[in-house]
Image 1 (cartoon, rainbow, N blue to C red):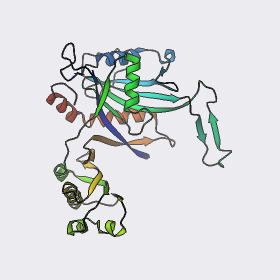
Image 2 (image 1 turned 180 degrees about the vertical axis):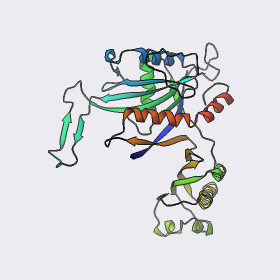
Image 3 (image 1 turned 135 degrees about the horizontal axis):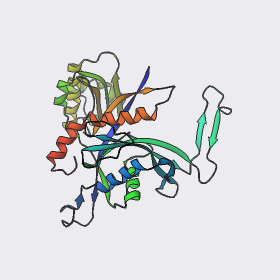
Image 4 (image 1 turned 45 degrees about the horizontal axis):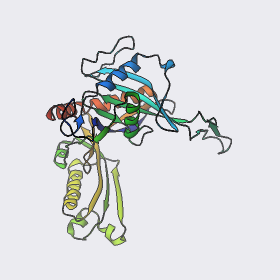
Length: 324
């Protein structure tokens, strides 16, 4: 059975008015965390016959529409399409949104044939365009959005889509911050990969040599990316290396642009960004006949959300119900 690792980024969205006001639902900073309009519209889409729906025009050449949608209760139990969603309970949505670009043709290549005879193009008409799918998890209660990085429908395009269907102006997003630090890594049970990038190593002292970066200065290059993976990475030694690099970063002996740690805490996958501290998640998705089924991708983004739900709920409560 073939599996592939899928990664997800976490955002939270809310409404913002440039005019700071306290009347209505906006707070003094001009922020409003009521996303019930989007909740109602997703319910309407859930109940609609997909054969009767038209894509929404985002801009001159870009269109988007939801092709599959699911309603889950807070524990991750899916609602049958025969039932009507109860928006009064704690819940979240998972859906696939398809974006089409009429400036682009769809190209299919048969890789076992030569480059010309194995190539087919579709979409010559001005009303046709290449499409891409993006799975999304959305909790309207706290504004959490989970979606794959570098997807066809990124967070800004998703906000644009939400605006088009709801006319809720001023939707903005923030990266969900993960409070995990290097100290928390002491309790991680397994590290499968460390990925970091350094720039501006300014000294060749003993700490640089101990971190294995002496050659960096000798070669006199500007950046170095290193990926440690495979084998049986020893957690204690790996954490010591990570802490050493972070210490040098704090002391301005080098500049860490990226520090990603992929591993497991008990049975839960952990993907930690120690530089940007953004919340990210990953899990394995089964590949069938060389392709990732849509149902599997929707299950995957749901699992990514549920694996971090407790942290998100705690953050939402700590912020008084205003984001995460």
